[in-house]
Image (cartoon, rainbow, N blue to C red; front, side, top):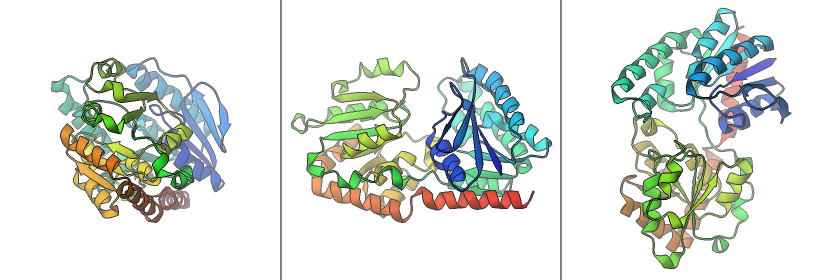
Length: 372
């Protein structure tokens, strides 16, 4: 059976789309094609990456790129289409009208995200969020299935389409096979953050907190990811504590593993936005998988995970002194920090891993094809 995965806004090697879903499908025998803005066609780990031209900006991506994705999708003539961006909803509806099986994969609550987008005028955010919600409400019942990455999203979409399942974006155990072998005492006092770097994701608070740590600790904050917006990197240069920051840029999966192997703490102190409050903390599961303790925002969902696994500390994401105290505690209590990391890894092995979620995805595909 041929599967065609579509994305206009994500990278070709997005961890959920490529490393987890596409590769899981290819391993069990599906013929998998990923249509994505990319430089060239190639086959990687059994997945055919079919490139379409990259967009020159947001408007171009939402028009020209979407159209190019649709044209290539038609050429592929797949048995199942699985798309990952709300801007591709019209593509999904057109494919459905042609009698195709279509799955909509909802990573985040886009209507909630619109409420805090800095590039949108304040007066436009609420009506735009409402419009996107109406579009999703109209389209969701017409698709073969909805896959969500969050439990709260699954609850919303189940009311629209009973063929909705949550496939959480948990960690890949095989990515971090050797992290437990790293000697804790040999690690530098490095504090790692991996992911998109923005003010809403706590950049200012992370930098200011590390500036408050005692000089004797020789702390280093390692930032791995892309800045949003791009000019935020210039603002970082003016922040107090920037001399303790190492900017690593975007890293591939091997690079991420190497950074976490040399870290003693993993950070995820995102601000309290409507979308963050209901989202699984994907990077936190990776920190846990890597065997390092975590410092997370004290959202109810996140606190339950961390306290339940006894693998880290929850803090007010806007309180730099509290964040610094958590950092200092983990750096000055190495035995407890190592034990937290070990318990986090155990929690991933038992519960928060992709192997379980991947089985749910494969079962859904079998069900969708059975109803052809």
